[in-house]
Image (tube, rainbow, N blue to C red; front, side):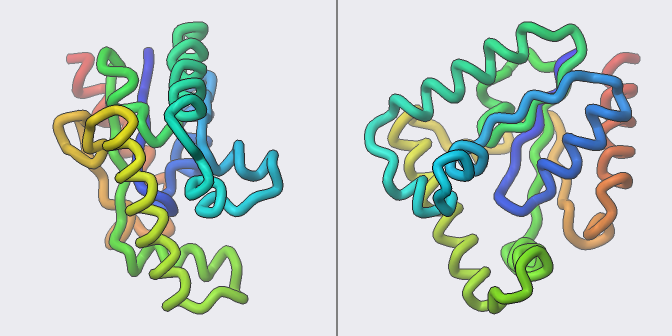
Length: 176
């Protein structure tokens, strides 16, 4: 079983995939610029602005696909996993409004003003989306790459286990 989870920054990917992998007793494969940036002691947006060429993106994406193939039961948390893993048993897109995602950023770091968080999230979305269009020629926000799209704001805001319940129900429905 291979479950691919993609989505916007602060949409809840890490939390949902951690809990989903635990619930399914599956290996978690996480590939993100956020992790690479942290290892380099850089802010992820600064890191994304400094990437030149496609080598890093393609290396990280090739690693993601290779790691996913190593496991019989796997949940992949990567921005492009829906596109990278077209044969996944389920491809999930997580999203929330900019307002909700900025609120999550402020909750994680109360020194950030909401207006600054909104600008930051908007810029991060724009920078990453444009780079992926340039590197791969795709719009990774396009619904055609996903089997299910879940708004992690609204009724699901701050309720990651409810999001996991929806994903598990979708997995069961696909097996019928």
